[in-house]
Image 1 (cartoon, chains in turn yellow, blue):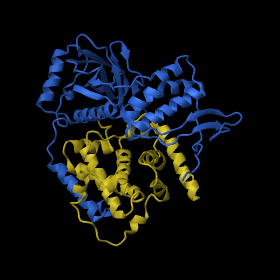
Image 2 (cartoon, chains in turn orange, green; image 1 turned 30 degrees about the vertical axis):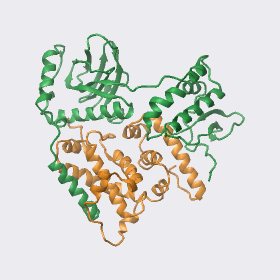
Image 3 (cartoon, chains in turn orange, green; image 1 turned 90 degrees about the vertical axis):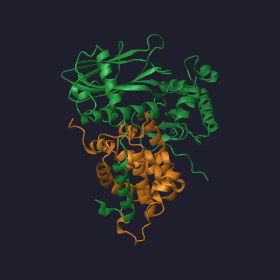
Image 4 (cartoon, chains in turn brown, cyan; image 1 turned 180 degrees about the horizontal axis):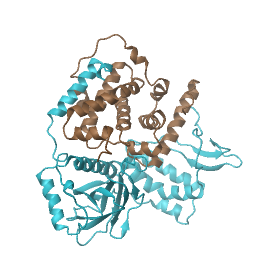
Length: 184
Length: 307
């Protein structure tokens, strides 16, 4: 059984009640998720909340998370995208969770400058369905089949969603005359 | 690694870790006595276990518990999230080699399908059959061949089983070339799919769909989605011409098609009600008559900016 590695192996331990394994998954992916979230929400503190809510949801839905290969990151990115979209109307469960932690009073973190940049910022005005598929297929470089596994839909559905999402993104950039670069 | 995190986020992390450490482990994740009894009972009653139900298959062995959890989570996600069905009854889990028969008894009320998920644990070829029907898809596999199938080496399928006598179905798993495998089997209920509307039946009755019929059916789909409060917005027709998507017909262009994103929220309405009722059969005929380019450019026709 030694082929089960990475997040899958850690998650099996999480399912058995091992908090330290959860902490390792958190440490592995939280910085990446935060860089992603910073582009989608108004403030760095909001990005922290998105990451916290994402992992809270991962724990709540621990039996239903999806892996792509052995990685949980695509599922986490999709969940973070949803969380960023819904942060202003978070569920009572989320508000109770977030309310347990003091808000940081700190100077602007230079690390906040190192986000996913214009590409993610461009996603901010798109619908959450567009954000999810663009995050996976464009920013993360997953194949349509891999993205389908993370989203729980058929590959053909990903193709259709991606097609329309790129059209809307292109439309936004055409309107603002800002070049997006070669990724799209 | 937590040095990179803010104090607030670090506090969230530590709180979640503490919560998990303090949480009781649910029976489904650490199989209890009931699960052990069910597996042993299946072994004793199911004399068809001609091959390799191994001692390691019994709950309590962590690697198998991991496999069981993965197959279960993946299957439930596919049945319930992606296909809008339900997992019913008590799923069965086996590891084995050669041939294994997994017998599902006591069909629950409403169960009309069998859901099966399996994965190889050593290289080889695995075939899964219900009656004389084998599940399609790749059979040869190597452990961890994540790139070859959805779910990172997990193969999955759901098959209708005739209602009626017996209330019992057997799934047979065969490993060739020394393949060892793990398999998860459950009763399931498929989604309740809408029947095609009389209008859609009329549009497909002659086996040919005209552009007018394609457009009319799509507008009914939009209306259905809007009525269900899942509007799809304005979706224009799109043609393909000289290697590009265009928003109007040109000499030599192909199409047109409606290129649209299926709604992520409320996908059950789209998948089980509006699409099958108003557009599925029409779309299938139209797409067959007007195949889209296999490798289209990434930029489609862009609708005019509004507002």
